[in-house]
Length: 395
Image 1 (tube, rainbow, N blue to C red):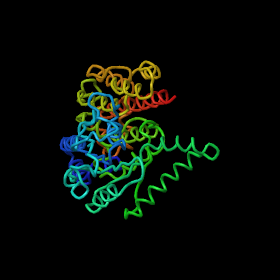
Image 2: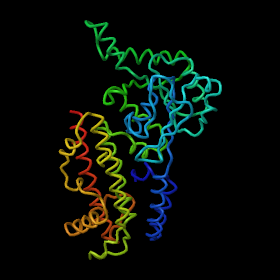
Image 3: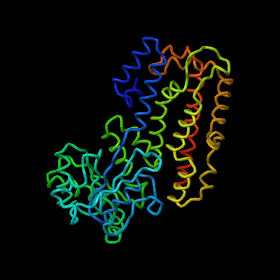
Image 4: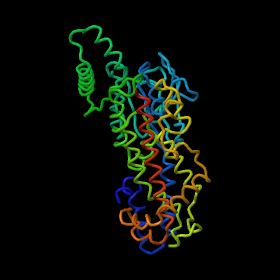
């Protein structure tokens, strides 16, 4: 049941179980389909704020897995370039919006009415940025957000500049770990002295994304979100570390039984080809979703190559699975289903023992087992190729 409780609300789980208990497979399947649609349509609004020059717009682009020069990216600069709260939709996940907010303390957005001016109630959480010490405006903003029971986090940006300066000044005693610890402790003390309870501070260099606290920040943001929004946030994360890829693989693996249930009628125990009454179009959508989540679609590969200074063909060269190399369309998916059915028609019976909720449902339709096996195989292959591609990019 863990896979359900992580994403689908308890009342929906009870509805599905009740329908299964009554033997109403159509009702259970339809309720599950509706729940999955609701999850995919769940809006997520992330607010990024702070004084000008701290890297707000660059972080907005990072969270959307975009470069600063790409079409549709947030405008960046050394002076305040954001004059109004500006929404930026995630290019792959349109329900995820990252807001670039004007810096607090600018003439139009003074501290006293800042939250009201930016309509704070629409955001799921705030990221408050500084490239130096967190100042009085930052602390006042955090207090106001805290009083209104919203989540917020602090990002101390441009730590690469501090490390370089320290290395130049302290050639004999320089320690990267020591400098980072000093920056973190100073930020935390400053915020606690200002009245912030247990501040969460993440050290970042937006020019070196694979270093410092970006991964820890992403994990913390995910944990702090309501359960029904965590899945969307995880899928939207940029694939810049192996742990993120593994988290995506595990999360999507938990959902396979749901997708297999939705696209299968489970109306017959016949093993004839005609009984594989699976919604192939739905499966195409699911497999394209896997491709997007792991960044192996054409646009994502191009962006990854640009980000790490590699050629796209160089990254493609390490993709081993013939399935991952194929264009995902109805014909491709139908052929996979046929091959899976021919290769192992009995796998569906074995799956019944460990798939949540379904129990004896699998015995009602072989198409569930075939669909489950096909999606599981594809997910594992695309996840392994995503690891190979990222490893190549990081070389």
